[in-house]
Length: 148
Picture (tube, helix red, strand yellow):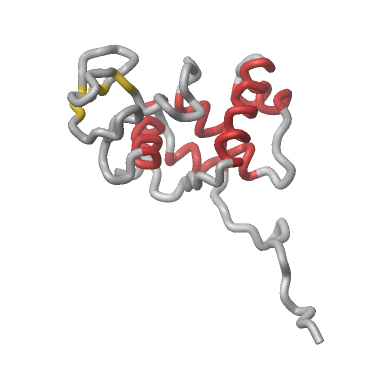
């Protein structure tokens, strides 16, 4: 006889997470969001997203702060990710990811537009990219972010 005491999924009351106020404390500015994305994308140090080379250095380029010595190309934390070709600040991306992933059924582009102060088409673009990135089962945890 099967055990009926076990649950297959966590209900709303059993879910653990962080609050919006904790998220705001973790990401008070753009620099903290940038540092968190770097730690998520490059957990073992900065590597070139094109050639996977580790011989990189910080450049003076305004939008592409890193340069690979192996392939001689500039790149940023957004290069090769769902955030590529986006001028949206990283802090807004963090909040959008949080709102989408914390919601049991996802969030609409209209709600995201109101919550983040972006246009509805920008919110739709962000949600499409976030859903595409998370469909690849790439974990992005908020634990320990911005506290370094």
